[in-house]
Image 1 (cartoon, rainbow, N blue to C red):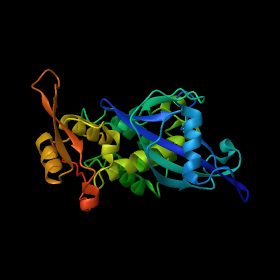
Image 2 (image 1 turned 180 degrees about the horizontal axis):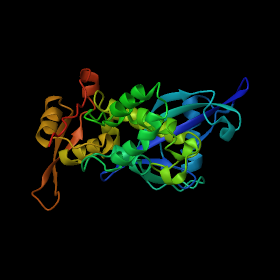
Image 3 (image 1 turned 90 degrees about the vertical axis):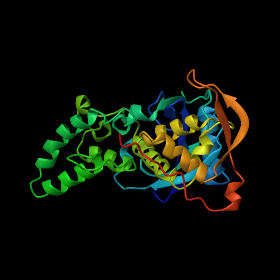
Length: 300
């Protein structure tokens, strides 16, 4: 749909967690997110997006919320073919095969953002990033102090705490420092897998939204099977946050918030004794407002 000299594009950040891997649905063999123009025949923005996802991936879409509208004047418009307003949506699904016509496929979040996964400790890549940022920080004497503080805050450097929610800020800083391929850097200095136009920026926005939202709304259950163990639930939250959670504190929080109920069934886990199966208490949404699934982080 044309708006003045611009046209509107619909983009989906379709997310699933399979095993312990947070994944995103892509097209073009992993290089782009499902997208397409908003057309006059579409009844609503959301219905238009669902049509494009169905056409390109043939994957069903359940939970969907509007994410952000990207309309920056300098946002890769030469690649996109004129001024483009991109209206993005975040979708939460259970992974299925995608036989659509857009070369669809599931790819891990951390293929595109490898510095975001801290479940096994601080990634060594952060040292490489810090080293590459150093010349950029010092090249502008007037702003070097501000740049250094920004790098420390965003990437948890020089004693600053890591904030898992700053996914977009970290990517945008790397873009500004020309350390990602989308900014035209030397590929040998690139961090993470590149995507078409600014689709990696849009993916970063979706990751940040979901990481923040699981702390105050029970959206994580949109990614879970009907019946699950508490360990499976914890692993899913850890996968999204890119952090390790304290097992007992996590279970205590879930129980205190009355988010789940036992099914009466059990499932064997990692060769140990059978674990109880639970299901999400959807009725609780009607009973009260949620305090949220706060993340009891491990401080090992």
